[in-house]
Length: 161
Ligand SMILES: Nc1ncnc2c1ncn2[C@@H]1O[C@H](COP(=O)(O)OP(=O)(O)O)[C@@H](O)[C@H]1O
Ligand SMILES: [Mg+2]
Image: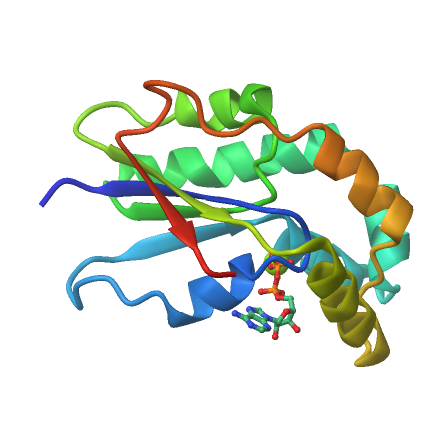
């Protein structure tokens, strides 16, 4: 079977990581999950600081570079790869898409969730001790969203986030 590169596309709180937790490929198909949040959490644990502090210390360029390094390592092994980042702009997606040569199947899963529901979920997540994403930060991210373009992916599906 051809290995798959699965790009999860959605704002914080849209359900990407929840989707990953339920993702079950064929039992003999290993897969890597490339998650910005997980990288930040690892850094926070190593430094013994809070998520927000670790996030501020890690420049976003450095985070993306580390995510690409991990992606390349998985591609060398021919594993399925799930990119659990917001993947909102076509430009950032392109910087990851180019890491997947044939025979990779490039798939996108788009998470569209009503704004009020996003705010509700993010408030609940922060309340439960998760990291806080403010409404203003959410709006900035929403503004850079580019829907998947013609020919960008082999397959696009829309998840009920
Ligand atoms: N389909 C869903 N319906 C209701 N709540 C959901 C759904 N998917 C995720 N959530 C909740 O929304 C919050 C954010 O989900 P998460 O998967 O962490 O989003 P993301 O990874 O996109 O930031 C979590 O508290 C999660 O339990
Ligand atoms: Mg997540």
